[in-house]
Length: 102
Image (cartoon, rainbow, N blue to C red; front, side):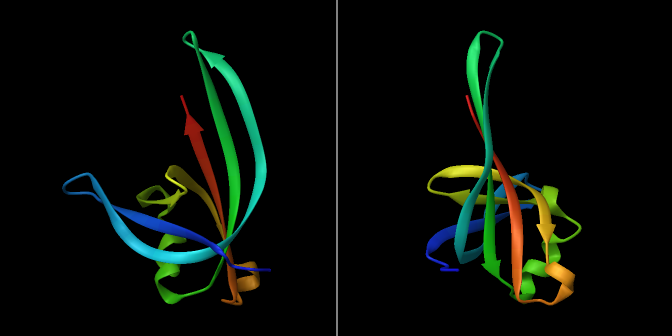
């Protein structure tokens, strides 16, 4: 697995409701699925990507607070829907991100 795609993980400041950069990582990115649908007269597209990153301690905070973090990849924002640290080995973490386009 080659970690060659740069991503930024951003954190929401609950007081100001503004996003700021939290971590800059390299990731192995894999498409999970995508869908397209018509809503309110416009076409909307949703894409799920799996971001595989090497474990680091700051990632641990995302575990139970996925709604306070998001991923920026190639200029697109992905909401973090799942965090998977396989068997809690702290080697690799899979983050499921959902990006939506309107």
